[in-house]
Length: 198
Image (cartoon, rainbow, N blue to C red; front, side, top):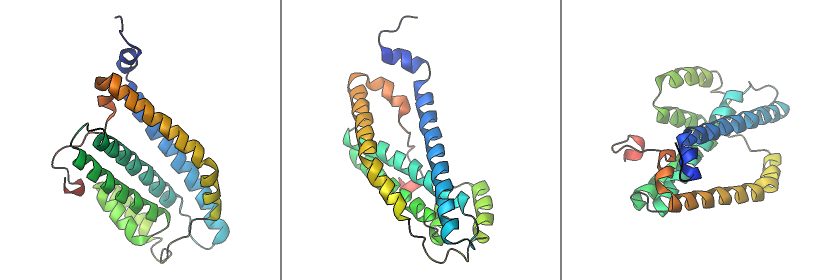
C-alpha cells in the first residue's frame, strides 16, 4: 500500500495507541518518581509516620490524568471540535478533580474519599479503603509541600511550558491539515456520562 502522507503511514501503524500508551507510561513514571521522592521527604521530616508511597503515587497519577483530560477538553472547546461550552465546562470540572487528587498528595482525608468514589471501581475502593483506614489518624492535617519541589518547578517550568507549547502547536497544525487523523487520539465522552452530570 502506498501512503499519500506521512500522517497516513503514522496512523496505520497505530499511532494513536502508541501515543496514548506513551502518555500513560510517562504519567506512571513521573508519578512513581514523585512518590519516591516525596516518601523520602516525609520520612526525613516525620519518621514516626507510616509510609505513604501509594498515596503520593495515587494522587500524583490522578493529577496527571485529570489534567490531561482537562487539556483535551479545553482544546476541544476552544477549537470548536465539539460544543465549545461543553468542552470548556468539562475542562473546568476535570481541573477540579485534578485539585482533589492534589489534596490526596497533601494527605487530606476527605479528598481520599472523594477521589475514590469518583473512580466508580469497587476493587479500588476496597484496597484503598484498607490503605486509608490504617493511616486515617495520621492524616489529621494537610502535609505542606517541601520548598525543594517549588525550586524544581521554577527550574523546569520554562522548559515544560515550551514543550507544551510545541505539542499544542503541532496538534493544531495536524488538526488543520489532517483533522481525520487526530480524531482517534481524542478522549471520547459519551452523552449521559455520570461524570459532572453531563
